[in-house]
Length: 438
View 1 (spheres, rainbow, N blue to C red):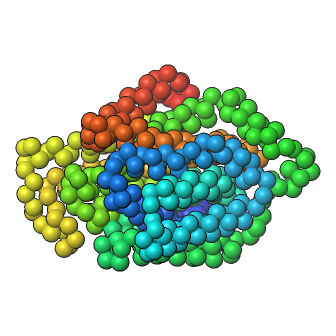
View 2 (view 1 turned 135 degrees about the horizontal axis):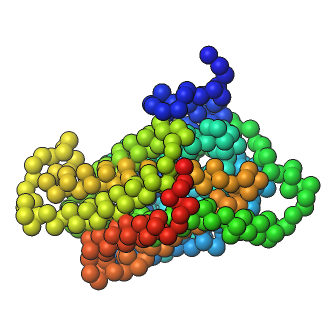
């Protein structure tokens, strides 16, 4: 019936997992599952630790912002490195360092020495490692699968990450309650051992390295070449702007979920895990839908519809607690014995699931079109710039956290969701290339 590179005809769920037929991508994908598990556990543990130490949304914002600063400052050098050296080796190094940092935080908690500035310092270092991790990881996918399978592989990579969002946060919430934050950090650290083992199984190749060595280009010149490409390609630049909008106005909701869990919905760390998992369920569904689409037409229209849905769901989730004004806060079930499930909490979970569907469909489609539009020799550098949009996400938490302490987190998040929907629509109307995007 054909070799592993032969895909099922486009359209339908039969082609959803086609890229996993490729041995190297399959190994990479399994290894990344462990990385995503660690990332989700670490996100919950860090947010709960900071809010437990300070009780301040401003502190959450500061820690988030610190992790985003290196992404803005080092994104372009990180992309240049991804185009010059073995992407596999870059990933092995940064994943190892991430596990070591998690172990260090667990040790500080056990010894009773942990302070907020420790968490800030670790967030800064972790943010710096991400500037090298993300361009290498994204560009490596293209090397492993080729352009024909790229959209499917990107969507499956996103599906794997969001599958872990269903399980890992709930498990992390239970672990925090059962064995404490220190134990959770140690488990989080251990997951990266498996990541490194799987990465070692991949070939240490890099298509761009020999070309760079012959040309002897400087890092500065290589970085400028990527920026010149962006300036000359209006479509890719517009897609990058559209990636930045949710990073600033919508995605910070994830870092403020502890406020909802502890002070608004009163469901504790277990409830926080369930909330993150609900968003993960939706995101997984969104990723699988994109993976099954094949080379679907009207990508621009689908992306903007998803963006509008994303912003709308953020606003509805943010305002869901005000339902208690009309329906009360009566407990309806114990929710598998984990947390009290009020009507408002259940409605919030529903909005989070829909939010996950819209957000992942939007970002997977955006990421795919950008990757497919970039020449192979520039992919690492351009994706380094693309990664800068992720740096805006934690930076967006800082003003939201400050405003949250002043006027309340629900109002601030609702406003951010509305802004995202409006700005996305304005860009859609202002850039004809996006409307014609197939």
